[in-house]
Image 1 (cartoon, rainbow, N blue to C red):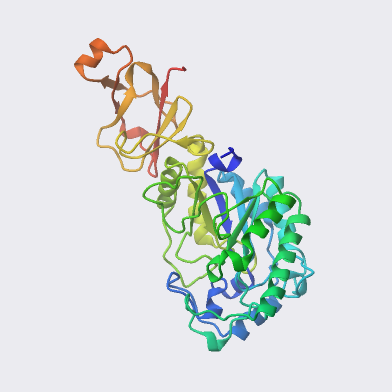
Image 2 (image 1 turned 120 degrees about the vertical axis):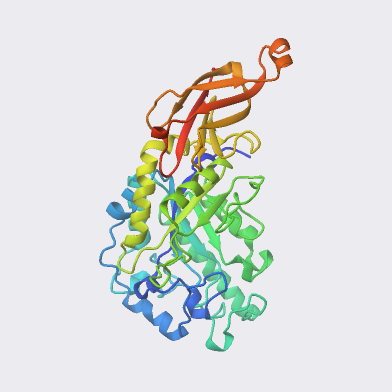
Length: 417
């Protein structure tokens, strides 16, 4: 597998936003009556949900200042925007449908503005695109009679309808791949509703390769994809190939003021450390309000993460997975001969690292203050006598003044090989 920028990106911004955000409704799922995985999701009449698109006018949308600048300050390397969710509403200008931002009071192409902003701040760009479309008549559109949503009982199209829908789907994808410059990631979703053969997934994948050879896709294009996408949790064992955990700050993807179950900033930092320590990326979701601004509760937490990253980004961005679990009771990352130890629990007095070449230790220090730390080493007596480069145990003294309230990071440098 050829190495790409994604392999060590470690931190990205997921942006769930749509016309439903102006009402504080979750994206798409309210129109089908909600879903078990979204405990604060509403149940909204379908006509009312879709009519809401006609008033979408995000007056405070400023992706350069609010979105891209914030992503840059957080140390994020890429961003993914929901350009079309399951409700079928397009945040881009499309010739295939009038159900788009072009036909709202706002009129401007949100996707183009987002792409320009992120690129200008050095952030790689991705587009979330739902294969399913609960608004399109040929999909067919979801109706009140189809409620409640069931994964094993979905409205089925006729062969003629499905052919028309596939043509529509491929045409919209072609627009995104040809009208907006280089796209770094296409993040598909909704694929569970049909088989890979029905989606013509291999044809979609081939079209992407032809139009955007460097564009990566996730595993939610059924049977295809360049990386795995575990959702809302950190896998116990990292997947065999490149991967990314997508995570919400509360329990909702879209802006939902009724959901007050926010993770703390410390939880978010610890999650980032753990994901990086397993060699994955954290795609952290933000949920802009209807006017385009981030909710204050999310900003408050992200500012703490940003302040932490100002000191510790070196231990996250561009690193590889670090030590094995038996070597260190915590998360760790690596950059060549340098190891970063993330202390996700406050140490009593010392921490220990096992299985290191103890005669190769060049220095031990605090990443934030650059303060050298006292340490001792030891190994089996016979190894000391018989082995010129033994593996042993490193014990590091951690002064109370070096403990960060969110997560302390210790740097262990080995001699260059």
